[in-house]
Length: 340
Image 1: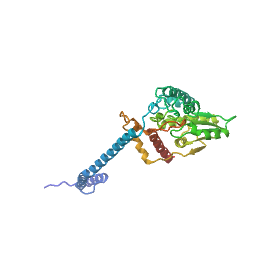
Image 2: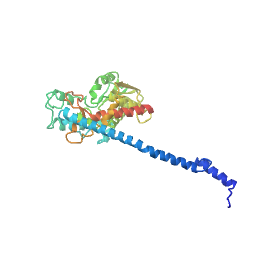
Image 3: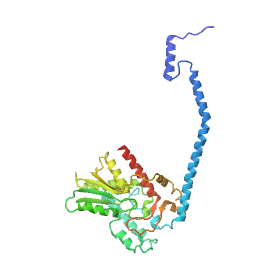
Image 4: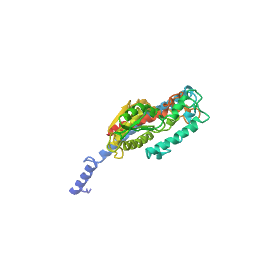
């Protein structure tokens, strides 16, 4: 019986192929055997891994559905009936429907004028106006007079006499209005600064304005106002930005992003009051608890509080989306701080 003798060069090529492929220098059957054994082991263990994962996923879905259902039912039972200011979403609010409002601060103020005209027409002159004697949405109440006939629910500017020393931009907190910045704004003005107190989208009008607002709308308004304020303060002069709670979080995010964005005027300093930098991890549930609000009769699940509105400059009722947006904003801010 004849045998074929491999030449040295053929043997060298065979060994080189086995080395480059990671196979042992002996027979390739050893590697094949190990791969087969590994596959059989994975096939044997697989069902033991898959079943617990499926059970865990089913349990998680059940828990989420239960939370959503229980919240919707308790909201329907616990909260009073929703009024026009809880249901009507004003169409003239700056945001996705009116992106041109962020092109300049003057454009933002013009959009704000249209917004407040719509507020008077659809809420105060509507058939569902409040009948509570001290109700904010009762057109004959002193509270409504304060809310409508003063400037503190709107963005406003304070101009110092003479040449300004610089500029300051201030933002209010969640469910608040520029009124809350009035005291500190007047202090800065008295010291020679040009001041802008910004109304964040969704605020100063009706609580339903917070039902579908996004934190990106707030930030876009901040950028618009910051460019305007810094320009009015004067080239090369100090520019400060600050706020309370949500406004402070927006100020911080703006300051961090301005470090890498030459289009943004860089603030010389921050003025932060009770900054909303971190909130409870349970706030993530706000992403899901209003999940049944689209079903007729369960609309109240879009709200965390439904209360009488008697404060001329702050909402008492509080929608789920507002909590969701501040939770998202603080997450974006933490990421920005980590990357800075």
